[in-house]
Length: 509
Image (cartoon, rainbow, N blue to C red; front, side, top):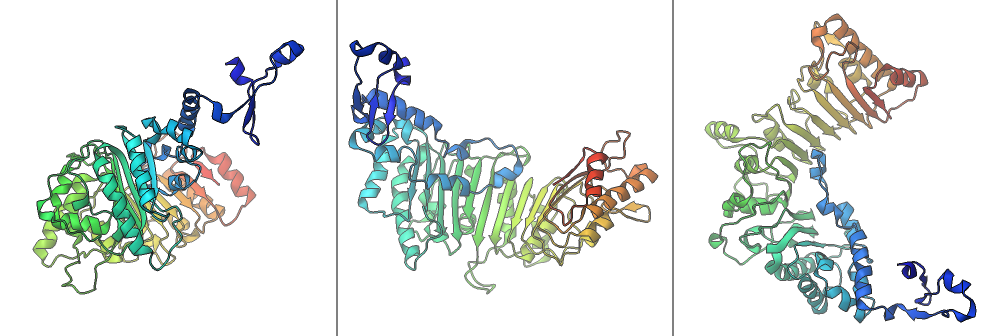
Protein backbone atom coordinates (compact mmCIF):
# COMPACT_ATOMS: atom_id res chain seq x y z
CA UNK A 1 0.00 0.00 0.00
CA UNK A 2 2.94 2.33 0.67
CA UNK A 3 4.13 1.98 -2.93
CA UNK A 4 0.58 2.40 -4.26
CA UNK A 5 0.18 5.65 -2.34
CA UNK A 6 3.39 6.97 -3.84
CA UNK A 7 2.20 6.57 -7.47
CA UNK A 8 2.23 9.84 -9.39
CA UNK A 9 -0.19 9.74 -12.32
CA UNK A 10 0.39 11.96 -15.32
CA UNK A 11 -2.97 12.51 -17.00
CA UNK A 12 -1.48 13.99 -20.14
CA UNK A 13 0.79 11.05 -20.90
CA UNK A 14 -1.09 8.23 -19.18
CA UNK A 15 2.16 7.37 -17.37
CA UNK A 16 2.86 6.66 -13.70
CA UNK A 17 6.00 7.20 -11.67
CA UNK A 18 6.63 4.59 -8.97
CA UNK A 19 9.56 6.42 -7.40
CA UNK A 20 8.91 7.12 -3.73
CA UNK A 21 10.47 9.83 -1.57
CA UNK A 22 12.53 7.11 0.14
CA UNK A 23 14.03 6.17 -3.26
CA UNK A 24 15.07 9.77 -3.88
CA UNK A 25 16.92 9.88 -0.59
CA UNK A 26 18.95 6.78 -1.40
CA UNK A 27 20.81 8.49 -4.26
CA UNK A 28 21.98 7.06 -7.60
CA UNK A 29 22.31 3.55 -6.22
CA UNK A 30 18.58 3.32 -5.68
CA UNK A 31 15.91 2.17 -8.08
CA UNK A 32 15.66 4.66 -10.91
CA UNK A 33 12.42 6.32 -11.99
CA UNK A 34 10.23 3.71 -13.66
CA UNK A 35 7.47 4.68 -16.07
CA UNK A 36 4.55 2.41 -16.92
CA UNK A 37 1.38 3.04 -18.91
CA UNK A 38 -2.09 2.49 -17.50
CA UNK A 39 -2.57 -0.18 -20.14
CA UNK A 40 0.12 -2.15 -18.40
CA UNK A 41 -1.88 -2.60 -15.21
CA UNK A 42 -2.87 -6.22 -14.61
CA UNK A 43 -6.60 -7.05 -15.00
CA UNK A 44 -6.88 -7.88 -11.30
CA UNK A 45 -5.75 -4.38 -10.31
CA UNK A 46 -8.03 -2.76 -12.90
CA UNK A 47 -10.95 -4.74 -11.54
CA UNK A 48 -10.05 -3.59 -8.01
CA UNK A 49 -10.06 0.06 -9.18
CA UNK A 50 -13.33 -0.34 -11.07
CA UNK A 51 -14.98 -1.73 -7.96
CA UNK A 52 -14.17 1.52 -6.17
CA UNK A 53 -15.76 3.46 -9.04
CA UNK A 54 -18.85 1.26 -8.94
CA UNK A 55 -19.27 1.66 -5.19
CA UNK A 56 -18.88 5.45 -5.39
CA UNK A 57 -21.33 5.95 -8.29
CA UNK A 58 -24.57 7.19 -6.71
CA UNK A 59 -26.58 7.74 -9.89
CA UNK A 60 -28.90 4.90 -8.95
CA UNK A 61 -29.25 5.70 -5.25
CA UNK A 62 -32.63 7.25 -6.05
CA UNK A 63 -33.99 3.75 -6.65
CA UNK A 64 -32.83 2.39 -3.34
CA UNK A 65 -33.20 5.18 -0.78
CA UNK A 66 -35.71 4.52 1.96
CA UNK A 67 -38.18 7.41 2.08
CA UNK A 68 -40.27 7.93 5.22
CA UNK A 69 -42.12 11.05 4.16
CA UNK A 70 -45.41 10.52 2.34
CA UNK A 71 -44.60 13.35 -0.03
CA UNK A 72 -41.45 11.57 -1.19
CA UNK A 73 -43.63 8.75 -2.45
CA UNK A 74 -44.84 11.07 -5.18
CA UNK A 75 -41.41 11.90 -6.45
CA UNK A 76 -40.67 12.04 -10.18
CA UNK A 77 -37.79 10.42 -12.03
CA UNK A 78 -36.32 13.76 -13.13
CA UNK A 79 -33.47 14.01 -10.62
CA UNK A 80 -31.97 10.64 -11.17
CA UNK A 81 -32.72 10.74 -14.91
CA UNK A 82 -30.33 13.69 -15.08
CA UNK A 83 -27.58 11.52 -13.58
CA UNK A 84 -28.32 8.69 -15.96
CA UNK A 85 -28.14 10.99 -18.99
CA UNK A 86 -24.51 11.72 -18.09
CA UNK A 87 -22.18 10.28 -20.73
CA UNK A 88 -19.62 9.36 -18.06
CA UNK A 89 -21.98 6.95 -16.30
CA UNK A 90 -20.26 3.79 -15.06
CA UNK A 91 -19.68 1.20 -16.51
CA UNK A 92 -20.36 2.51 -20.05
CA UNK A 93 -17.61 5.13 -19.94
CA UNK A 94 -15.02 2.64 -18.70
CA UNK A 95 -16.06 -0.04 -21.21
CA UNK A 96 -15.65 2.42 -24.10
CA UNK A 97 -11.99 3.24 -23.33
CA UNK A 98 -10.45 0.16 -24.91
CA UNK A 99 -11.04 -3.54 -25.55
CA UNK A 100 -9.04 -4.67 -22.53
CA UNK A 101 -11.00 -2.46 -20.11
CA UNK A 102 -14.29 -3.63 -21.61
CA UNK A 103 -13.09 -7.20 -21.16
CA UNK A 104 -12.42 -6.55 -17.47
CA UNK A 105 -15.80 -4.94 -16.68
CA UNK A 106 -17.74 -7.46 -18.80
CA UNK A 107 -16.57 -10.30 -16.55
CA UNK A 108 -18.13 -8.76 -13.43
CA UNK A 109 -21.97 -9.04 -13.33
CA UNK A 110 -22.06 -6.60 -10.41
CA UNK A 111 -21.04 -3.77 -12.72
CA UNK A 112 -24.05 -4.36 -15.01
CA UNK A 113 -26.82 -4.52 -12.43
CA UNK A 114 -27.96 -0.99 -13.41
CA UNK A 115 -28.73 -0.50 -17.10
CA UNK A 116 -29.97 2.53 -19.02
CA UNK A 117 -30.92 2.72 -22.69
CA UNK A 118 -32.16 5.83 -24.50
CA UNK A 119 -34.72 5.79 -27.28
CA UNK A 120 -33.65 9.14 -28.75
CA UNK A 121 -30.09 7.93 -29.38
CA UNK A 122 -29.10 6.23 -32.63
CA UNK A 123 -30.68 2.88 -31.91
CA UNK A 124 -29.50 0.62 -34.72
CA UNK A 125 -28.92 -3.14 -34.69
CA UNK A 126 -25.42 -2.66 -33.26
CA UNK A 127 -26.70 -0.65 -30.29
CA UNK A 128 -29.47 -3.18 -29.67
CA UNK A 129 -26.86 -5.91 -29.79
CA UNK A 130 -24.80 -3.96 -27.24
CA UNK A 131 -27.79 -3.68 -24.92
CA UNK A 132 -28.34 -7.43 -25.26
CA UNK A 133 -24.67 -7.98 -24.38
CA UNK A 134 -25.00 -5.76 -21.32
CA UNK A 135 -27.90 -7.89 -20.09
CA UNK A 136 -25.77 -10.98 -20.64
CA UNK A 137 -22.87 -9.38 -18.73
CA UNK A 138 -25.22 -8.99 -15.73
CA UNK A 139 -25.47 -12.77 -15.36
CA UNK A 140 -28.15 -13.62 -12.81
CA UNK A 141 -27.85 -10.34 -10.89
CA UNK A 142 -31.05 -8.55 -9.84
CA UNK A 143 -31.54 -5.66 -12.26
CA UNK A 144 -32.47 -1.99 -12.30
CA UNK A 145 -33.42 -0.99 -15.86
CA UNK A 146 -34.33 2.40 -17.24
CA UNK A 147 -35.63 3.18 -20.74
CA UNK A 148 -35.77 6.92 -21.34
CA UNK A 149 -34.72 9.88 -23.43
CA UNK A 150 -31.28 11.43 -23.16
CA UNK A 151 -32.69 14.78 -24.33
CA UNK A 152 -36.34 14.91 -23.21
CA UNK A 153 -36.85 18.39 -24.70
CA UNK A 154 -35.93 17.45 -28.27
CA UNK A 155 -38.81 16.59 -30.59
CA UNK A 156 -39.40 16.14 -34.33
CA UNK A 157 -42.39 15.33 -36.53
CA UNK A 158 -41.39 11.69 -36.97
CA UNK A 159 -40.46 11.29 -33.30
CA UNK A 160 -43.64 9.46 -32.25
CA UNK A 161 -43.37 6.58 -34.74
CA UNK A 162 -39.63 6.22 -34.15
CA UNK A 163 -40.04 6.23 -30.38
CA UNK A 164 -42.81 3.60 -30.51
CA UNK A 165 -40.65 1.31 -32.65
CA UNK A 166 -37.58 1.72 -30.48
CA UNK A 167 -39.42 1.06 -27.22
CA UNK A 168 -40.94 -2.07 -28.77
CA UNK A 169 -37.49 -3.34 -29.84
CA UNK A 170 -36.07 -2.65 -26.38
CA UNK A 171 -39.02 -4.27 -24.61
CA UNK A 172 -38.56 -7.42 -26.71
CA UNK A 173 -35.01 -7.65 -25.37
CA UNK A 174 -35.98 -6.90 -21.75
CA UNK A 175 -38.93 -9.29 -21.52
CA UNK A 176 -36.97 -12.49 -20.72
CA UNK A 177 -35.19 -10.65 -17.90
CA UNK A 178 -38.16 -8.99 -16.14
CA UNK A 179 -38.24 -11.88 -13.67
CA UNK A 180 -35.02 -10.60 -12.10
CA UNK A 181 -35.81 -6.86 -12.29
CA UNK A 182 -36.02 -4.94 -9.03
CA UNK A 183 -36.98 -1.71 -10.77
CA UNK A 184 -38.15 -1.13 -14.33
CA UNK A 185 -38.68 2.46 -15.46
CA UNK A 186 -39.96 3.78 -18.78
CA UNK A 187 -39.79 7.57 -19.07
CA UNK A 188 -40.63 8.61 -22.64
CA UNK A 189 -42.56 11.27 -24.54
CA UNK A 190 -45.70 9.47 -25.78
CA UNK A 191 -48.02 7.16 -23.88
CA UNK A 192 -48.50 5.22 -27.14
CA UNK A 193 -44.83 4.22 -26.88
CA UNK A 194 -45.20 2.63 -23.45
CA UNK A 195 -45.52 -1.15 -23.13
CA UNK A 196 -49.04 -2.50 -22.75
CA UNK A 197 -49.12 -4.01 -19.28
CA UNK A 198 -51.88 -6.51 -20.08
CA UNK A 199 -49.93 -8.17 -22.90
CA UNK A 200 -46.24 -7.22 -22.71
CA UNK A 201 -45.35 -8.36 -19.19
CA UNK A 202 -44.72 -11.88 -17.89
CA UNK A 203 -47.14 -13.54 -15.52
CA UNK A 204 -44.80 -13.28 -12.53
CA UNK A 205 -42.21 -10.76 -11.42
CA UNK A 206 -41.06 -12.04 -8.01
CA UNK A 207 -38.39 -9.37 -7.40
CA UNK A 208 -40.04 -6.29 -8.86
CA UNK A 209 -40.53 -3.53 -6.29
CA UNK A 210 -40.84 -0.51 -8.61
CA UNK A 211 -42.60 -0.37 -11.98
CA UNK A 212 -42.94 3.00 -13.69
CA UNK A 213 -44.56 3.66 -17.07
CA UNK A 214 -44.44 7.44 -17.54
CA UNK A 215 -44.83 9.73 -20.52
CA UNK A 216 -44.97 13.51 -20.81
CA UNK A 217 -47.68 13.47 -23.52
CA UNK A 218 -50.90 11.47 -23.45
CA UNK A 219 -51.89 10.18 -26.89
CA UNK A 220 -53.46 6.77 -26.40
CA UNK A 221 -52.58 3.13 -25.78
CA UNK A 222 -49.96 1.18 -27.63
CA UNK A 223 -51.47 -1.10 -30.27
CA UNK A 224 -51.05 -4.83 -29.65
CA UNK A 225 -52.07 -7.87 -31.67
CA UNK A 226 -52.06 -10.13 -28.61
CA UNK A 227 -55.34 -11.50 -27.29
CA UNK A 228 -55.98 -10.14 -23.80
CA UNK A 229 -58.63 -12.79 -23.15
CA UNK A 230 -56.00 -15.52 -22.79
CA UNK A 231 -53.51 -13.72 -20.55
CA UNK A 232 -52.42 -15.68 -17.45
CA UNK A 233 -52.79 -14.76 -13.80
CA UNK A 234 -50.25 -12.16 -12.68
CA UNK A 235 -48.12 -12.15 -9.56
CA UNK A 236 -46.19 -9.11 -8.33
CA UNK A 237 -45.89 -10.12 -4.68
CA UNK A 238 -43.49 -7.45 -3.40
CA UNK A 239 -44.31 -4.46 -5.61
CA UNK A 240 -44.03 -1.25 -3.58
CA UNK A 241 -44.46 1.50 -6.16
CA UNK A 242 -46.47 1.53 -9.38
CA UNK A 243 -46.68 4.44 -11.82
CA UNK A 244 -48.71 3.98 -14.99
CA UNK A 245 -50.41 6.01 -17.68
CA UNK A 246 -54.19 6.32 -17.68
CA UNK A 247 -54.63 4.33 -20.88
CA UNK A 248 -52.89 1.31 -19.40
CA UNK A 249 -54.99 1.65 -16.25
CA UNK A 250 -58.27 1.79 -18.19
CA UNK A 251 -57.14 -1.12 -20.37
CA UNK A 252 -56.46 -3.23 -17.27
CA UNK A 253 -59.77 -2.31 -15.65
CA UNK A 254 -61.70 -3.28 -18.76
CA UNK A 255 -59.78 -6.19 -20.23
CA UNK A 256 -57.50 -7.65 -17.57
CA UNK A 257 -58.89 -6.69 -14.17
CA UNK A 258 -57.41 -9.80 -12.59
CA UNK A 259 -53.98 -8.21 -13.13
CA UNK A 260 -54.66 -6.16 -9.99
CA UNK A 261 -55.25 -9.38 -8.04
CA UNK A 262 -51.54 -10.11 -8.38
CA UNK A 263 -50.58 -6.94 -6.48
CA UNK A 264 -49.88 -7.05 -2.74
CA UNK A 265 -53.17 -7.20 -0.86
CA UNK A 266 -53.77 -5.69 2.56
CA UNK A 267 -57.10 -5.31 4.30
CA UNK A 268 -56.06 -2.15 6.13
CA UNK A 269 -55.07 0.58 3.66
CA UNK A 270 -52.90 2.19 6.35
CA UNK A 271 -50.66 -0.86 6.42
CA UNK A 272 -50.30 -1.46 2.70
CA UNK A 273 -46.95 -0.37 1.32
CA UNK A 274 -48.06 0.15 -2.28
CA UNK A 275 -47.91 3.71 -3.58
CA UNK A 276 -48.13 5.01 -7.10
CA UNK A 277 -49.61 7.31 -9.69
CA UNK A 278 -51.93 7.29 -12.70
CA UNK A 279 -51.39 10.06 -15.23
CA UNK A 280 -52.81 11.26 -18.56
CA UNK A 281 -56.09 10.08 -19.98
CA UNK A 282 -58.44 11.65 -22.50
CA UNK A 283 -61.38 9.94 -24.23
CA UNK A 284 -61.28 10.04 -28.00
CA UNK A 285 -64.38 12.27 -28.27
CA UNK A 286 -66.76 14.24 -26.07
CA UNK A 287 -69.65 11.95 -26.99
CA UNK A 288 -71.13 10.08 -24.03
CA UNK A 289 -71.48 7.01 -26.26
CA UNK A 290 -67.75 6.96 -26.99
CA UNK A 291 -66.47 3.53 -25.85
CA UNK A 292 -63.21 5.11 -24.73
CA UNK A 293 -65.01 7.05 -21.98
CA UNK A 294 -64.39 5.62 -18.52
CA UNK A 295 -66.34 6.00 -15.30
CA UNK A 296 -64.23 6.91 -12.27
CA UNK A 297 -66.45 4.85 -9.96
CA UNK A 298 -65.35 1.75 -11.86
CA UNK A 299 -61.79 2.48 -10.80
CA UNK A 300 -62.22 3.00 -7.07
CA UNK A 301 -62.73 -0.63 -6.01
CA UNK A 302 -59.27 -1.31 -7.45
CA UNK A 303 -57.60 1.83 -6.14
CA UNK A 304 -59.02 1.67 -2.62
CA UNK A 305 -58.05 -1.95 -2.05
CA UNK A 306 -54.51 -1.69 -3.41
CA UNK A 307 -53.02 1.75 -2.82
CA UNK A 308 -52.09 3.45 0.43
CA UNK A 309 -50.68 6.49 -1.37
CA UNK A 310 -51.81 7.59 -4.80
CA UNK A 311 -51.47 10.48 -7.24
CA UNK A 312 -54.06 11.09 -9.95
CA UNK A 313 -52.74 13.48 -12.59
CA UNK A 314 -54.35 14.92 -15.73
CA UNK A 315 -57.19 12.40 -15.97
CA UNK A 316 -60.52 12.93 -17.73
CA UNK A 317 -62.72 10.12 -16.45
CA UNK A 318 -66.50 10.45 -16.36
CA UNK A 319 -67.83 10.99 -12.86
CA UNK A 320 -71.57 10.49 -12.89
CA UNK A 321 -73.33 7.09 -12.78
CA UNK A 322 -76.50 6.87 -14.81
CA UNK A 323 -78.97 6.23 -11.97
CA UNK A 324 -79.38 7.13 -8.30
CA UNK A 325 -78.95 3.48 -7.34
CA UNK A 326 -75.62 3.38 -9.16
CA UNK A 327 -74.54 6.59 -7.42
CA UNK A 328 -75.44 5.18 -3.99
CA UNK A 329 -73.65 1.91 -4.70
CA UNK A 330 -70.56 3.72 -6.01
CA UNK A 331 -70.36 6.00 -2.96
CA UNK A 332 -70.49 2.99 -0.64
CA UNK A 333 -67.67 1.32 -2.58
CA UNK A 334 -65.28 4.26 -2.42
CA UNK A 335 -62.48 4.10 0.12
CA UNK A 336 -59.89 6.75 -0.55
CA UNK A 337 -56.19 5.81 -0.19
CA UNK A 338 -54.53 7.05 3.00
CA UNK A 339 -52.65 9.77 1.08
CA UNK A 340 -54.16 11.16 -2.12
CA UNK A 341 -52.79 13.81 -4.47
CA UNK A 342 -55.00 15.30 -7.18
CA UNK A 343 -53.09 17.18 -9.90
CA UNK A 344 -54.46 18.99 -12.96
CA UNK A 345 -57.84 17.28 -12.70
CA UNK A 346 -61.10 18.53 -14.20
CA UNK A 347 -63.47 20.12 -11.67
CA UNK A 348 -66.22 17.50 -12.07
CA UNK A 349 -63.77 14.69 -11.35
CA UNK A 350 -62.20 16.48 -8.39
CA UNK A 351 -65.70 17.03 -7.03
CA UNK A 352 -66.68 13.37 -7.41
CA UNK A 353 -63.59 12.21 -5.54
CA UNK A 354 -63.69 14.74 -2.71
CA UNK A 355 -67.41 14.59 -1.98
CA UNK A 356 -67.85 10.81 -2.09
CA UNK A 357 -67.65 9.42 1.47
CA UNK A 358 -64.41 11.18 2.35
CA UNK A 359 -62.74 9.83 5.53
CA UNK A 360 -61.25 12.21 8.07
CA UNK A 361 -57.88 10.50 8.40
CA UNK A 362 -56.82 11.01 4.78
CA UNK A 363 -54.00 13.30 3.76
CA UNK A 364 -55.33 15.21 0.75
CA UNK A 365 -53.14 17.21 -1.65
CA UNK A 366 -54.85 19.35 -4.31
CA UNK A 367 -52.44 20.73 -6.91
CA UNK A 368 -53.65 22.93 -9.75
CA UNK A 369 -57.25 21.65 -9.67
CA UNK A 370 -60.25 24.02 -9.87
CA UNK A 371 -62.14 23.81 -6.57
CA UNK A 372 -64.10 27.09 -6.49
CA UNK A 373 -67.32 25.03 -6.42
CA UNK A 374 -66.54 23.64 -2.95
CA UNK A 375 -68.93 24.55 -0.13
CA UNK A 376 -66.45 23.49 2.55
CA UNK A 377 -63.03 21.92 2.65
CA UNK A 378 -63.10 18.19 3.39
CA UNK A 379 -62.24 17.48 7.00
CA UNK A 380 -59.18 15.45 6.00
CA UNK A 381 -55.99 16.33 7.77
CA UNK A 382 -53.41 17.28 6.70
CA UNK A 383 -54.86 19.27 3.78
CA UNK A 384 -52.43 20.69 1.19
CA UNK A 385 -53.40 23.23 -1.45
CA UNK A 386 -51.14 24.27 -4.32
CA UNK A 387 -51.92 26.88 -6.99
CA UNK A 388 -55.63 27.30 -6.24
CA UNK A 389 -55.94 30.73 -7.89
CA UNK A 390 -57.07 34.12 -6.59
CA UNK A 391 -60.83 33.51 -6.79
CA UNK A 392 -61.03 30.84 -4.10
CA UNK A 393 -63.02 32.02 -1.07
CA UNK A 394 -60.82 30.75 1.76
CA UNK A 395 -62.88 32.47 4.46
CA UNK A 396 -66.05 30.65 3.49
CA UNK A 397 -64.28 27.32 3.13
CA UNK A 398 -62.34 27.54 6.40
CA UNK A 399 -65.10 28.88 8.65
CA UNK A 400 -66.24 25.47 9.92
CA UNK A 401 -63.34 23.40 8.68
CA UNK A 402 -62.53 20.69 11.22
CA UNK A 403 -59.07 19.73 9.99
CA UNK A 404 -56.02 20.23 12.19
CA UNK A 405 -53.22 20.80 9.64
CA UNK A 406 -53.34 23.17 6.65
CA UNK A 407 -50.59 23.74 4.07
CA UNK A 408 -51.03 26.39 1.37
CA UNK A 409 -48.49 27.08 -1.37
CA UNK A 410 -48.63 29.58 -4.26
CA UNK A 411 -52.27 30.41 -3.49
CA UNK A 412 -52.84 34.14 -4.18
CA UNK A 413 -56.30 33.96 -2.58
CA UNK A 414 -54.71 33.18 0.78
CA UNK A 415 -53.86 36.73 1.93
CA UNK A 416 -53.92 39.03 4.94
CA UNK A 417 -57.72 39.10 4.96
CA UNK A 418 -57.77 35.31 5.40
CA UNK A 419 -55.29 35.57 8.29
CA UNK A 420 -57.47 38.24 9.91
CA UNK A 421 -60.43 35.87 9.56
CA UNK A 422 -58.48 32.97 11.14
CA UNK A 423 -57.65 35.19 14.12
CA UNK A 424 -61.28 36.02 14.83
CA UNK A 425 -64.39 34.31 16.18
CA UNK A 426 -68.03 34.07 15.15
CA UNK A 427 -69.91 34.36 18.42
CA UNK A 428 -68.22 31.83 20.67
CA UNK A 429 -66.73 29.79 17.83
CA UNK A 430 -63.16 30.21 16.60
CA UNK A 431 -62.85 30.12 12.82
CA UNK A 432 -61.15 26.90 11.67
CA UNK A 433 -61.61 25.75 15.28
CA UNK A 434 -59.39 22.66 15.16
CA UNK A 435 -56.45 24.30 13.33
CA UNK A 436 -53.25 23.35 15.14
CA UNK A 437 -50.62 23.69 12.42
CA UNK A 438 -50.45 26.18 9.54
CA UNK A 439 -47.78 26.22 6.83
CA UNK A 440 -47.80 29.08 4.30
CA UNK A 441 -45.41 29.15 1.34
CA UNK A 442 -45.15 31.98 -1.22
CA UNK A 443 -48.54 33.55 -0.52
CA UNK A 444 -49.48 37.23 -0.20
CA UNK A 445 -49.22 37.48 3.57
CA UNK A 446 -47.48 39.99 5.80
CA UNK A 447 -45.75 39.53 9.14
CA UNK A 448 -48.13 42.05 10.69
CA UNK A 449 -51.18 40.01 9.65
CA UNK A 450 -49.52 36.80 10.85
CA UNK A 451 -48.83 38.36 14.24
CA UNK A 452 -52.39 39.68 14.55
CA UNK A 453 -53.77 36.24 13.68
CA UNK A 454 -51.65 34.56 16.36
CA UNK A 455 -52.61 37.17 18.95
CA UNK A 456 -56.28 36.92 18.00
CA UNK A 457 -56.36 33.13 18.43
CA UNK A 458 -54.42 33.47 21.70
CA UNK A 459 -56.95 35.95 23.05
CA UNK A 460 -59.89 33.76 22.05
CA UNK A 461 -58.40 30.70 23.76
CA UNK A 462 -57.41 32.72 26.83
CA UNK A 463 -61.04 33.75 27.21
CA UNK A 464 -62.36 30.27 26.45
CA UNK A 465 -59.69 27.57 27.13
CA UNK A 466 -61.96 24.87 25.70
CA UNK A 467 -61.29 26.37 22.26
CA UNK A 468 -57.66 25.18 22.39
CA UNK A 469 -57.19 22.81 19.41
CA UNK A 470 -56.73 19.15 20.33
CA UNK A 471 -53.42 19.03 18.44
CA UNK A 472 -51.90 21.58 20.87
CA UNK A 473 -51.25 20.41 24.40
CA UNK A 474 -51.83 22.78 27.31
CA UNK A 475 -48.29 23.46 28.53
CA UNK A 476 -49.21 26.42 30.67
CA UNK A 477 -48.18 28.81 27.88
CA UNK A 478 -50.26 30.63 25.28
CA UNK A 479 -49.15 28.37 22.45
CA UNK A 480 -52.14 27.44 20.31
CA UNK A 481 -50.68 27.08 16.84
CA UNK A 482 -47.60 25.68 15.17
CA UNK A 483 -46.73 28.07 12.36
CA UNK A 484 -44.32 27.79 9.43
CA UNK A 485 -44.15 30.62 6.87
CA UNK A 486 -41.83 30.81 3.85
CA UNK A 487 -41.86 34.09 1.95
CA UNK A 488 -43.74 37.17 3.20
CA UNK A 489 -44.52 40.40 1.39
CA UNK A 490 -42.78 42.62 3.96
CA UNK A 491 -40.05 42.38 6.57
CA UNK A 492 -40.99 44.58 9.49
CA UNK A 493 -38.18 44.28 12.03
CA UNK A 494 -40.46 44.72 15.04
CA UNK A 495 -42.73 41.90 13.89
CA UNK A 496 -39.73 39.69 13.12
CA UNK A 497 -38.38 40.18 16.63
CA UNK A 498 -41.81 39.47 18.10
CA UNK A 499 -41.95 36.09 16.37
CA UNK A 500 -38.42 35.24 17.47
CA UNK A 501 -39.23 35.92 21.10
CA UNK A 502 -42.85 34.70 21.16
CA UNK A 503 -42.47 30.93 20.86
CA UNK A 504 -40.37 28.11 19.43
CA UNK A 505 -43.50 27.02 17.56
CA UNK A 506 -43.19 29.83 15.01
CA UNK A 507 -40.75 29.57 12.10
CA UNK A 508 -40.61 32.45 9.62
CA UNK A 509 -38.30 32.60 6.60
